[in-house]
Amino acid sequence: MRSRRAAVKAQRRTFMLGLMVLTVIVIGSVLLGTIRTQAAPAEPSYKYYTSIQIQKGDTLWNIADEYITDDYDSMDEYMEEICAINHILPGDIHSGQYLTIPYYSAEHLK
Image 1 (cartoon, helix red, strand yellow):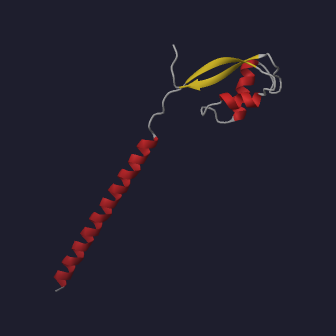
Image 2 (cartoon, helix red, strand yellow):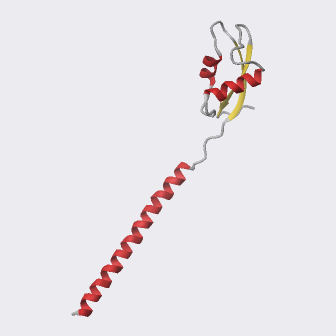
Image 3 (tube, helix red, strand yellow):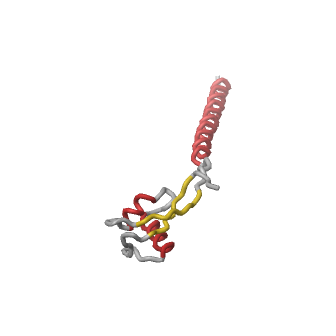
């Protein structure tokens, strides 16, 4: 009788251990698949420059808002780059003036 109980108990332990191992394998596979999906390489983007003429009523903010891409962390960072490229201060733009504007594109121009 005791050996029968011991055998059933051992069988349950083996079953539970197998079930836990299977659960860990399934969870690990799901997590690994998720990590691989998130780590997929992004499409490369290339930096280009264009020249625009300032129109009456234009501000650096609305110009930056029109040309900014997701490659920049913030609008301030983008406006600082525009100012640095053009050697200007943020409020120092005038109608008729030309600005060099950076932008990114996935299209590779030759």
